[in-house]
Length: 300
Length: 185
Image (cartoon, rainbow over all chains, first blue to last red; front, top):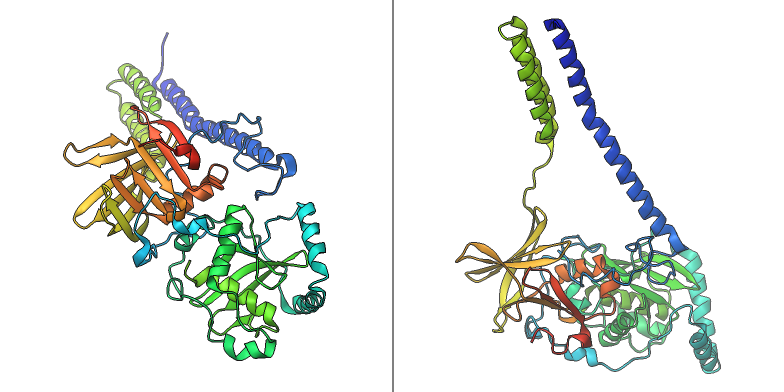
């Protein structure tokens, strides 16, 4: 059988074309595998209709749709630690001079006394109703005024349209005071109320003092222990989602607050003492401002 | 991809034997060379795994239970591992952590090799991680923030985590809080 050079070239060209096409086919196969895998994950995520947080009954997004073996976390609590947390990386661990340095011992401050912070979460109706009924008679007048003011202020300039923020960032955990990752502004450089803006206005509002740093820190510690995303701002009906507090400039913060069963994103200037660019219109707003600034910048 | 040049090469050789000496062989050679370049290009274009620094953290460390000292932690991604270089004065301790499965090892300068760790432990409330008992302890909130967000189910409500590695470098035991009493002593 004779083979002409022309035929050989044609045959080679065919093989070459086939081989050139091969990676594209392989890539398609890979793509379809990836797609299958992602759609599987999507289904898993949607499964149960759970929220992305911990409150939902749908489970974590890390779980697979193929049932629960109970061993999904058998790899232990460690990993590479290379995934950038939502708050970013810290450049300087603000460790106090008297901190005692690295230690695996439980710090003494964790044996604190419980403070007047709500232990219930939304959804535990039994406790909530009991508390509400018990306090109603005592604080009827105070609550009525607070609610009236809150409602008026909410309708004025508080923002309900915002992108959902993870209320459980990596730093919102035991040791949060050092774990806050921001590297700028007043963080670590400010210690305790009162703020410069407080004194002059306090008399107008008829309130003697703001909640101390210790009270707010304890409220956050308790909320972390109880897996609550929020703290009750002392002497108010506001629920501050402490994990959403983020510095937005050298002395300003943004945060989400719950009031009247709605969530609002606010910004506050801790130096000039404003919320959404305005002076607090009452003592409750001042307490909210104080709490958010303490979580962002105060010693803890 | 490694198979492809071999097949083409053999085909080319077979072809070349039959038409050796012809002017066409030169043309085919050029064609094959062009094809090789075509195939090599995507491989060349793929990013090589270069070390990428995640962060540099000024913090405190302690060695073998001694008093805390200022130190700098540099976290670098290198291939499938993350290296944590702890500079304490003139001493440098490097820990390598890999995932799936989690393994940790320490660089031994004398032997110029990685040695598997025996234990690691972390206390969230003090932002501390310790390697091989108290051989090296460091305040590294970045590492713990990352772990906390990556493993919410495993770490929620936990303060102390300890792991014990087997001789093969894999985790033999993980314990949390009260479950760690007597572990890794």
